[in-house]
Amino acid sequence: MHSFGGQVQAMINSLKANKALRGKRKSGKELLEGYAGNHRDPLQFKDATEKEIENFKQALHVRRKRERIRNFVIYLVVFGGVILALYLMF
Image 1 (cartoon, rainbow, N blue to C red):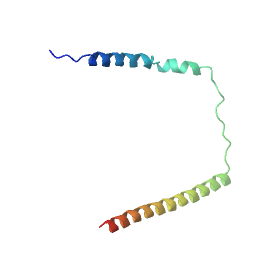
Image 2 (image 1 turned 180 degrees about the vertical axis):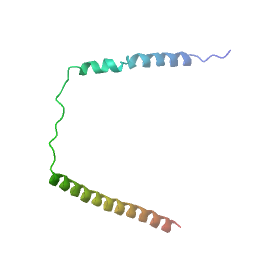
Image 3 (image 1 turned 135 degrees about the vertical axis):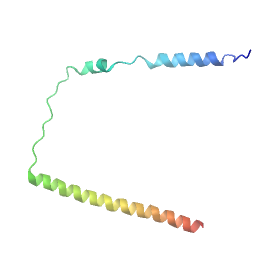
Image 4 (image 1 turned 90 degrees about the vertical axis):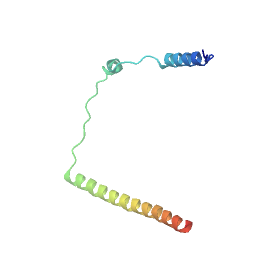
């Protein structure tokens, strides 16, 4: 017979110790019990005017355009660097 010495028993003890440290899991109902008395008023948002909506859309359009240009420049620089590195390598 082969004997593993104390390795297997050490592994079993380690697993038991880790399991004891984990603690008990709580069900979803138990987790939500603490929130039962926490009733807030629903969020209220002001209605935006047509002018505010239009200004927001324009600002968003400008921001997206800047991001597209910035991303294009970054990709161009990185891709150009890779091409240059490959050219110099061979």
